[in-house]
Image (cartoon, rainbow, N blue to C red; front, side, top):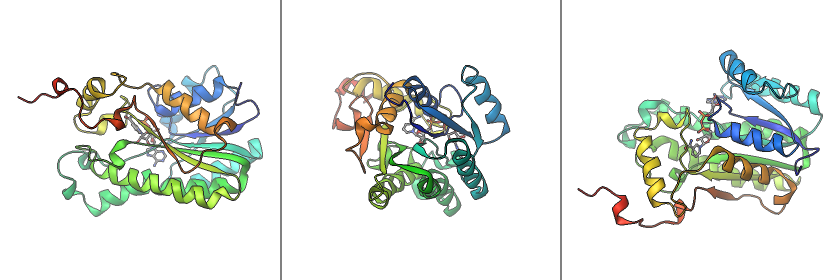
Length: 263
Ligand SMILES: NC(=O)c1ccc[n+]([C@@H]2O[C@H](COP(=O)([O-])OP(=O)(O)OC[C@H]3O[C@@H](n4cnc5c(N)ncnc54)[C@H](O)[C@@H]3O)[C@@H](O)[C@H]2O)c1
């Protein structure tokens, strides 16, 4: 019960495959009071089914492209909890056509859309959360290796994740004086709704299984436990950090040669 007495919000549960769902479950299992957000009415109905054993979990509508829904979400959180101790940012979006082929073809609209939803939203959500965050508050965002290295087809999302990771560091610097920590988790590929938008995603998974030191893909509960740790006081000395939950993939220069089809 590491999270007993802690309250907060997880954004980005689309369905039972979502990384945010793994995080929500880890937080609930450790005794946290968790609120979740939904994108729209259809998403809300899915969440209600997932949370059938947790009627105490409030669901707020939050579409980060609509500032009024960010405002109403944090108003609702303040009314429900007073203060919050954690915020988990687990959302991203890019046009599917920008996750295939040449990055050079990215349009300004596609570039702005990906960066707006996937990176700037961390800034706007942190700003909205700050007035009601406790002094031991923790903000966690989800990122991917494509922010720092070339990952074929990740394209504009890699640029957005680079902006997200850098935003984590600057936000950590701004909020650190209040005791609030900001960190990122860089997860390995996991088959989710968002991941399906990346061209050839199934090959990314196969390469992960052959090349990563752990020789397997990661699971949402593994990411969930690390997010829970970063939300907890156990990680009180960690801020402005990107923590990998990728089976060690990021440390590999060249994997076993038989992992690549060279013919
Ligand atoms: N799946 C992977 O392989 C992987 C790896 C590393 C990092 N990540 C990151 O993990 C996070 C969660 O993604 P996932 O893979 O669990 O996929 P997912 O599809 O389950 O979750 C993505 C979420 O983003 C939300 N979202 C999209 N546009 C939004 C908007 N305008 N306002 C609010 N929410 C919006 C969706 O509703 C959805 O809940 C993302 O940041 C993703 O980039 C995923």
